[in-house]
Image (cartoon, rainbow, N blue to C red; front, side, top):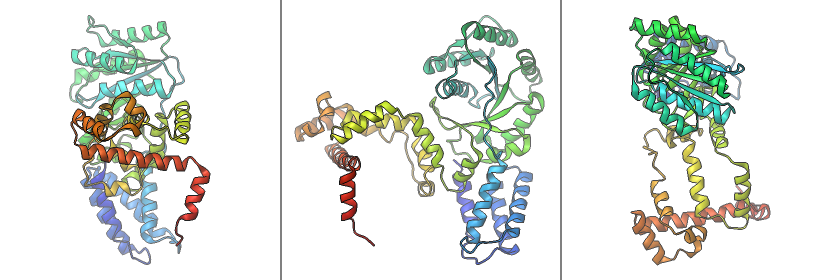
Length: 442
């Protein structure tokens, strides 16, 4: 996400590195490089020019503290201005009406139906809501089937009327069904449409007028860059939507849509999609995204994702097992599954300050744990519970069963044993204090 832009901004900042002060000349040179980087990222030209002019004026007018270098000051100014450009503050959904009606609109292929399923899962698991999905795409039977599959996957009911060809009637029926069945949020998945298709645009305007939604979310593929912004403007002129959803931010996106859309349509980005899994949806935080673009990571979002998978009771049990040195391969496998639910690995690493730059040319596969899982799954229940029982002949059998080689099995077991020792020491304050005393001091 934003790798090319981050890399180019980093190179632009090097103009100021080593400079003792900020001058109009060195700032102008840096801003020229930053503007080029933004345009290469497919940011709207007016937005890029206005942004760099604002940063330049603030940089020239700033007093550089002796403890802060010009490069550091400009990074801070850029961080603040990028956050402001993308909306400044986090825009939450309005959910105080029962039922809250959310209309989902967007182009064909933008990931609208997938997002609808993700939103239902988010509202159910994170907001303690009881959502209902309404299949209102009468033109594509596969969209109805897809929504039903997603609804079953996340445990959310789906209202379907395959006999009707009237999207207004279906939307109204869905809301009536929600009221009868105690669903406090209704998410209406409308058909994808092109902005140039007048009949389809009139149709969604009529659906909006009939159901009076509290939220209208416009779903856009972030990989389409400036085209996404232009399309958003046309839809906003017709629908006056309340927020934008950027999908496919885990792909090779240049970032232009995220950086331009707020300034062009003056509507906040409310969610971003970062993968195919139903958990791969994040509330959009402009300040955190600015930090990630500048290569400073996003530890807060990383912690939040971890907390979503965190079970307090399970963690307490795990802590007891670690203290007694009873941490086994069942526990290890369970921890891997929780990490996998947090999102794709490269995205997670990009949230750690400094790591994003180190990983930019490294391919991190989503199936990075595949061999480890295969090895653990090839163990017997007794071996998983008692790792010390895995002798050489058992290791050979496990390697054959998992489709790996003996060296890989030996390496995993050695790493597991080392990890178990460290975990036991960390759970024992006295042992930790003793270890700290033995450490050499510089």
